Image (cartoon, rainbow, N blue to C red; front, side):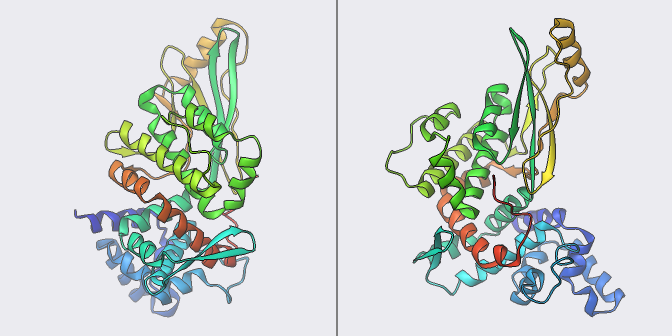
Length: 353
C-alpha cells in the first residue's frame, strides 16, 4: 500500500455510510448508481481525496446558505465537514498570495504567505492530519486520575481542553506511556492557537505560566520572554510534538493512563460534546490499605484505562513533520475557521471556558 492509498484508507475509516452517500450525491441519482459509486470509493479510497478537492463537492458539504440549520449536520459527520473545509482552503490558497491572520475577534491582518500555506496543504498527509485534529476536538474528553499517596488515595481531574490539567497526566504516567499525552498537548496548542487565538490570550493573562508549563512537561529550555501569544504556542506545541515523536516507536495514539498491577495510578474518563467532561473514579476513597488494594485490583483486568481523546493514531514521522511545519498548520486552521467553520455555525467548535 503506497502513501496515497494509506491516506485514502484513513479517510475512509472516519466516514459513515451517510458520509459516503453525501459524497456521491445519492439524492440526485438512482439508488443503484449511488451504491455503485460508494462501492468504487470503498475499493479505491484514495479517490476520496480527488472527490473532496472538487469545489462543488466541498461547497455542497459545507452548505453555507441553503440548508436548514437544524438538519445541516445530522446527515454527515464532523470529520467530513472538517475535511471539506480543509480541502476548500487548500484550493483557495493555490490562487491567493495572502491569507488573513485573525489577531482579535474583529481584526484581520493580511499576511502574504499564501504560497507557503498552499505548499503545506499540497501534502495529502497534512490535509488528513488537520482534518483528524479538528474532528478529535468535536468531542472533548476528561476524567479523574487516582494515585496512591502516603495520605491515601488522591483524585485529580483532567480534561483535554485545559493545558495545565492535561499536563498533570504526565506526573502520573511512566515514561513509556507519556508520548500520547505530549502529542495531545501539541494538538491542543495547535487547536487553540489556530481556531481560538483569543483563548490563548485569556489563558496567558490568567493562571497559565508558560515557563513553568514548559519545565513541568519536559521541554529543556524555557521559552523566549519576548514571544507573542501565537509564537509562544507554536514553540510549545512544536516542542511537545518533538517530545512525543522522540519517545515513541512507530505510531502514537490517544492518551491512556497506565495501571500497573501493584496499584499504580488509575484513570477513568468520559467524553462529551462541545465542552470538557469529567468522569468519576471507580476506586474507593476509603483510608485503608485494603481499600486501595482492592480498588487497583478491580481495574487491573485491563493493563490500562483509556482516557480517550478521540485522536487517531498517527505515524511518528507525520508528527515530527508537523512539528517542523507547526506555524503553517496554525495559519491554515486560522483561515479554515474564519472562512468556513465559523460562518456555518458548527456547534462542535465550542471555545474553551
